[in-house]
Image (cartoon, rainbow, N blue to C red; front, side, top):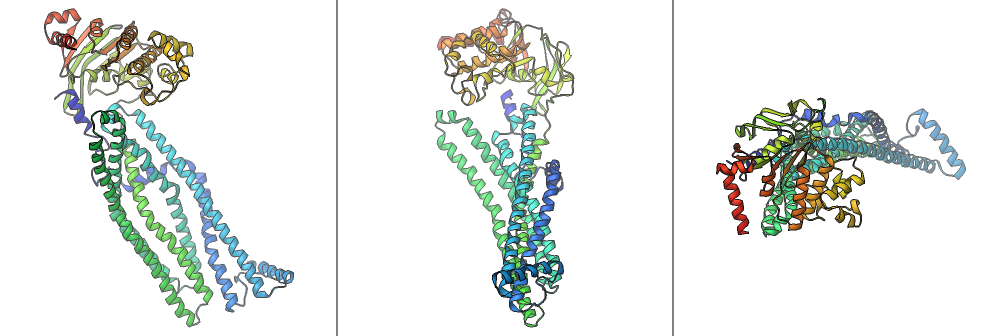
Length: 636
């Protein structure tokens, strides 16, 4: 099995995404996930306390509205001749105000009371609106800040994780967690949880009020509310797994979208538009079916909740009508109970809907925490001492490395490279050349052995201090969608404009950059799309010159470029290799011959090692590679 096949096999064993089996979970309990989510709310205790106070005021104000209606109806029907509300400290000032209105506007007592009660009712409803708006805005703001903190932690984690994680998890899956999963969590934290607590407080206060008005009629909502809660609990049992499947299929679809956009040139070049559309159609259809399957439960339970609410109204009319005919309550009380029934059942029904949002949030929290819970195999070691300035001597000592456990790529790889030497790795595709330089640049962690720089075990020092003294130029070099200046600052954030132009001059790109409309501030398209392949590579080389690393890792590009760019690149490579230790995956014979040591790798083993002339004399693997390359050059 070649190294690439082993990496492909490893990439199929996802760290956290594959733990998310179909209709399964990551294994975290609901209580644990609740603690995880609410941990991001704790920095905002002061705001939450204030919101709690506003919720209490909202619940109390909501309970006042039907009382005002009850008082008005009782007065106009003649069922009440006492004070408006039966509370002296409220009735006394209100009666004084009624007398003032009668005298001022020459109104009858009935119209004066109607005016006062209308004003009181409007004021109460206005307060309900203001308090509701305030609590929604405040908790929404807290939810957004919690989402921001969570997304920042996720992004920080993605920067920390080594390449083995990114190899095994598609960009679309990761994007799905940073967007839709976090949105589900925010919608719960930033609204649904607190609003349902407010609704619960409202239910408790209203229940106290209606029991004080008519204990017998209060039994009707007392019986129906537990039924609604029970329906919500039952729905939870059936919706959780369905919501998980919706999230899973959505993340797969997002992964396909990301892959399709990233590989659009390949798609067009191979006329794969039709196949891609059909494949995406299948993924889209799977997500649609999963979503419909999940929404089916809502379509069943929500009408049941509404029917239960209407049934409650019917029983209040029935029981209240009987008691009204028996003279045990007034019309005002019956109307007030009908209003209280709406107030009671609205939050209870919303609580039933909340279960669906809760399942979405818990599913999202599982997937988010799975990412945050993943341990990097190459720790940053920030609390370790910094690596002192190095000369560049490198020692691989009995390195064992495997992408897939039990399938080693290297068993006991050993290689000594003196400081300032240039080593060229050659071999067939999939022989393991890229793997060894990825180990050197600490993109992957080896399982056994020691990697020493200037005699120091590199794992005993902070990773950042090590990477500050090395530079890696991969074959698929990457440029930011930013200005040329920002891309050059990848090499040295403190580089002056003069330093940048010197580096560009060294790689033969100064005149071209100066001729551009905005010079160094010229924005580049995604992955440097405004530049040719050769120009992009020269920009990367200039950044490396600014970094001035003691160890250079170069995976020589195989892309076909014009002869003028090729000449510039060869000159730039020669400049880069001067006075530093360099490891090159070489494809050009000219680069290979210039190396101090050539290491021939085959199936994870060093099969030959020496200079160009020495290896040619051996008539072995290297001789065969050179002969094939010369024959290829003659053919082309």
